[in-house]
Length: 312
Image 1 (cartoon, rainbow, N blue to C red):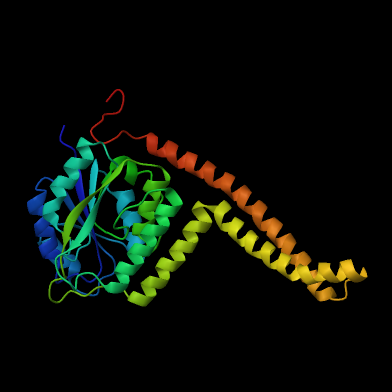
Image 2 (image 1 turned 90 degrees about the vertical axis):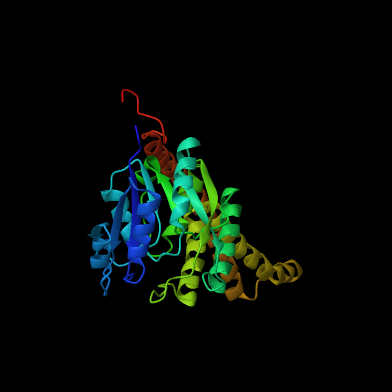
């Protein structure tokens, strides 16, 4: 049976590019249902997308993460192709990405961007991408070359087992972490990446989104590797306490007195906090493991691409 394919295009003020994007995916995947989710656009995005032949729906909560959550919850398909509505991703690459997902029974194929225009990819965006890629490789032992790519193909079991928590553009990082955390079979395919068409403007802000990337890195360490995160905090506090206590110990060994009581209290407090942080990391590590098991079971409840459920 031919798998049902849904093309998902989250959009915000993409009047200048959405018709071209819809037409390109219609040509590449003629049997797919193309959904455009308008996220409070102030221009004619919804009208132009509808005229181009897309199924247009709306999400009122502002932010790409909110849109992805709504799309994944509402749309029922066997294979999901997600891209931005700004005509920067190569729709012609979609059939090969879908074929690889099905043939190799993968859960996600990432379109790793290859710039076709020097202005297509900002320098700050490239730096953040490399930083996040290295961090994820350290956390999970593997990563992707383009963590922040918005061009991805998903299996049904990925989409329906993914509890979207992000609100904004950090959704791509959360998607990658979900796949790496559950050790899903995934792949990357290099795809051309183009500059936006005239009249279309990027919604990314270098400094604001750079700060979001930094926050995402810290949040990932805290949530996904609490033993490492809180262990680092504990080590820093314990190390500071030990350094401050050196003079106290020397004075005590020489005189039997502890003349600097505030320093002694501070050292005691640091060592107590270090112990609490260490044990908090151990406890939260157990909680994270339990959460991973629940998510893994939800993931395994659905068949792999190309497989039918038992009795189907």
